[in-house]
Image 1 (cartoon, rainbow, N blue to C red):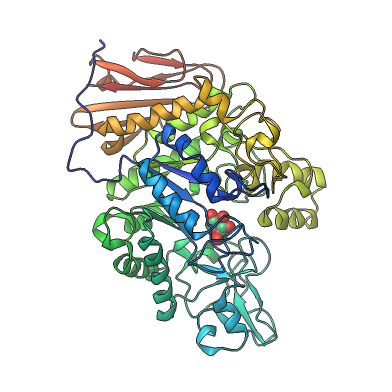
Image 2 (image 1 turned 90 degrees about the vertical axis):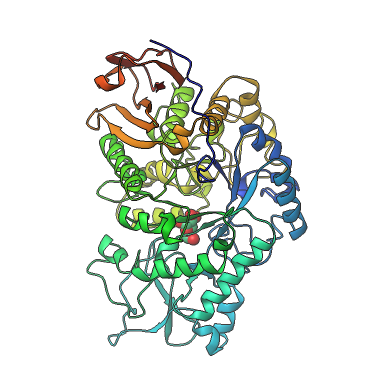
Length: 566
Ligand code: GLC
């Protein structure tokens, strides 16, 4: 029984953010207009039409502030200016305006857990200024001369480094050039609030807060039982004071404007905290990123390994977050890609034999979930991991540190490279592939990072001209705006034990939306529960031939389909 269902268009009185789709731009790699091999703000402006055509609402820019770029801008040396590498403040103002004319808001990336060691605050502290020394976590060595704690930096090596020529050490949970800011100090918090207000005044529409849940280190720091372990992370992650400080940040800044959208990047968080961060009654954030679902190809929790991904865990984790956040009235950012992750299509699919099916299947599993979907640049045209063969082709600080660590631990060069090809953050940072011309139309010069050599086939121009991945993303985005069951519906996981198909249902006002996605090649069948059968339905979207909702549905290679049922 098939019927046209038209009554699900979005209704009034609904939270204004839930039908939005956010697109992440990695400015270094998006589009270069001055030939220096690094993307820039005029480059972003020149491609706003492309983003408008895609249909996104918000463009999140990875950091564009002055920075020595040890961690590609996540080491901020001045929070209130634009890095000349990317352009000028006037360029930024033009970007905000031009984007607004196309109905696109700009979201900035606020890195407030740490600042660059080149930031004035750190430099003044180093020069002996006591006021600024209190901006950082400075500690003496232990009595036996060892570091203040045994904590590990997330980028490898110890989390403490000597503070100038004093006998103190400063804490850096990330790179040695990224000094953790002491949020216990009210002057630090006041300065950071001021930074956020500065950009609100420039007309930005949202903020992404980098690693926000590790700002709450206890002032009394103690050793962990095992350096780098989860137990160690728990010492400084999601501590109760983080919620207080986020509420304070909200009140002092973005909470004053309900149109702004905020997302917190949460390292190693859990559902109860996720609910606290995002339940509207708590006035913290609109949504959060969590990463557990992107650790399903880690061997015993170790990122620098390369096993097959564990599909049942992937489903279980996504399901836990979907259901848990729904139950607690929280809200997820839903995503498979960003600038820290390998390309999901290379990771969970087959980009050689089924590039279209893989990319659209992954997109559909995410976009029809409960939460706000994020698209990372290049995902919408099917960009892949570049598979560089030399360590020198990789630029990322974390990759290079871990290459060294893997070699020290006894891996051969080839073994280490195989892992890096799968896991390096540079997998997603290669320049955007616009055309099949010189350097894919990204730059007229030498790009800062090599391109993937498949750009003659995989590029935006091709995608715009053919009915391919880009068009599928356009449809998914348009559907979210058209059907409130997608933006508002509740979520229910189905067939959680099915070894090849991810299945879930969205429900709203007596209607159901069944989403089926096959994560493997070949055929696979799934039994559909009776309550969904013998009702009027139609196929809302799919990437293959299946268009019948029957007792048993069979899906082909990486096939996905969604049925809307009255
Ligand atoms: C976040 C960013 C990552 C950066 C780190 C330290 O995880 O996404 O790119 O390296 O924070 O700022």
